[in-house]
Length: 251
Ligand SMILES: Nc1nc2c(c(=O)[nH]1)N[C@H]1C(S)=C(S)[C@@H](COP(=O)(O)O)O[C@H]1N2
Ligand SMILES: [Mo]
Image (cartoon, protein in one colour):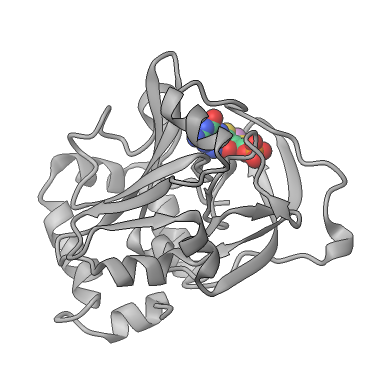
């Protein structure tokens, strides 16, 4: 099942729409969120959402694919459990989906490969000033979250990664509008080959309407949360906490 923003809202306040509309009220109660809405970021996010609605990011043809797609950020994961899993071809590895869900999931790579797949050729834009067009394949995130059953308090999907910078874990987060967007997938395949370690094996997020740093690699766990406060630096991601990058990194 794919839920578009329109469908989410169409479900009304008692249904998933309540997640969005009710969420605003509750978020407004927190001064942090009020500050961020008053900021340029809040304005950009709301303006972009109004303009784009549930529009798709541009997709490209095979001929437009970049001849090379660089590896950026961490290209290797130090974590010993990760190294063992990588060495075994991720045989016993599972992706956990937990937090504010009715049924926590543990999905093996075969389970992810067995779900309906989406393939998309998109342009990745890194804030450092480079872009590359690549082909990504994997299951959509929305149906996986629907299978776990979101609790009414759930507002954000947090992606916990296996890597770290200077001992600080890499993580990222998106809201439910992006989580249920049709182009938001858990990619295990890139350019017709299994994801390499450098590009984020075994699975990485593709959230195509946002910048490169939101495309979390080495995703181990997806946690559904009511708020980003209280998690690491509280700003929803490694770069947001430590480098002042914006949480909503719209392209
Ligand atoms: N776990 C994790 N995800 C990450 C990063 C990282 O260092 N660790 N770097 C981010 C940045 S800044 C970019 S531009 C892309 C790079 O993806 P690539 O290596 O496939 O080009 O991954 C993003 N996701
Ligand atoms: Mo980036």
